[in-house]
Length: 134
Image (cartoon, rainbow, N blue to C red):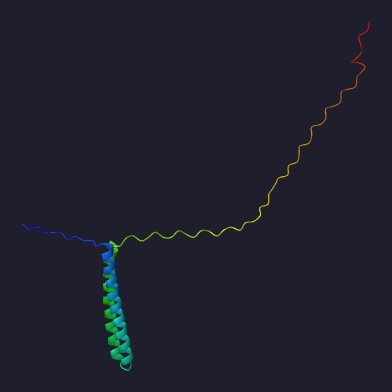
């Protein structure tokens, strides 16, 4: 009987990942710089020959592609072990309001009119106040 072991991924510590990423980035940058310098030197030297310039360009393109692939691979490995990014900064506070003097709006209420005076007592009438006589 044959037992097949499944491959498993070992995650490195963030420190090791940072070092690896830095080294890969430095190597990619060095390769790109070297390819750029070679292209510039070739272009400066072989300005008269079009075929040489084309060949140099093709070589540069290949080197750049390889560098990009390496950088992409390094980035993929880094993404698995990188810590989460910090939260975005809070939005800036709104500008302060200009303080305008507030006009007080008073509703001027009129005082209710005073109640009418009570009517005067009626004058004595002869028919009502007549004393009963003999």
